[in-house]
Length: 158
Image (cartoon, rainbow, N blue to C red; front, side):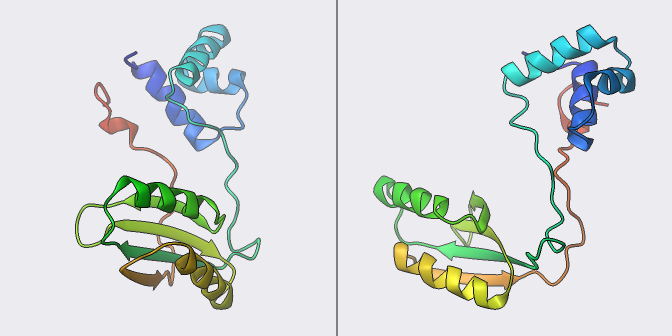
């Protein structure tokens, strides 16, 4: 399925505010309610929408610390990768994992409440998986936070 301008508008509107009613979405994209609802259903069915969430204020709920953990491993085999995947899934503090090309093999984003809670996480984590090198970078300030994808970069975008 290729998406058109109306689909991009729908995706843009709901990535700003997933709590909008279908009537509000249709009004903002310039479609009547039923065609807008059908398009939204099709976008979900075709996998363009992974889910709808509420973004929480991290510091307001007491999760003050964001740590980016860079990992190097000498293990580049399926068994190690499967174990790594299952280990990272054990830790709710790990909110994002990326496999990288370059100097490091993996980048983890870890969110926790304090240095001591990160230290406890770190000790548990390194005991469960063999790693060559782990470097932790503590975020001092979040300059930009967005979950918005750049839809204008999609084929056929503006």
